[in-house]
Image 1 (tube, rainbow, N blue to C red):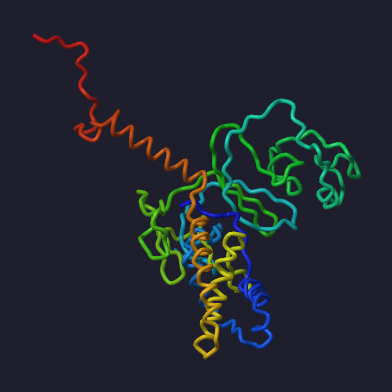
Image 2 (image 1 turned 120 degrees about the vertical axis):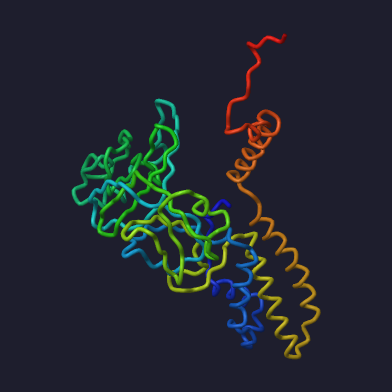
Length: 351
């Protein structure tokens, strides 16, 4: 499964408002009951599967062998034990958060004007009381962009990368590398260079393809009663999970996509007309129109959600290549005793 970081969402009330505009007569007569549609929205979210849930990240502080899972925790993706880290103190107004950053090798030409056609980011300059940083060499924003540099240490006003590109990412040309960066609310930034595996016991809250179920390590964890338990008494655990379909205020969320919105709207309309039909209203003809379009909208939404993206297609291609290599080029590997090398007959002589 390729987890989703970019899908946008809207609240249940927003969908209901769009439906009420289409059924304005019924809405004015108070014939649309929102409570009857909440359970339908939850069913539609479940029908589309886990791919519509937002992937979230957090670093948990385990104390006395356990820690409470986030309030919006839904499905466990994977977890890592956080080992050694470096810490730096930054600007006190920095917003906290946790993320995993993959730093691949990127080769660019020697002379590239990365700032064209933009200028210096004035919001960065104005946020600095002294107006004197690498991004703002003078006391005011100028039209020329300074030469981009990769900072050797964390700068709260210009974090991780070129000063004129958003979002800024710290690039490293030493090959593929993953590092965990945690920005604490007090302005402290922790960069973890050592990430260790954590073996998890099977549970309903854990994804079936979770790598933590198959690693061989002494450190073990399990989920019970909304808590994460570990064999370690005190540690830090990076948790990647699928969040529940609700916002910070507990409002029900649905995906916001042009090819998915019609599925929710037609499903709401079909349920409203069904309730009216049960109450003796003559809406049978309108129900036939809505149900035919609901079926087409559902097929379109499921087709979009289940379409593999590029990374999934790449993984399928590599899986097929490995399978063909084992079948045609290395078919006797599994039959070698003790993984010994095959016998070579190059220097033998037949008598």
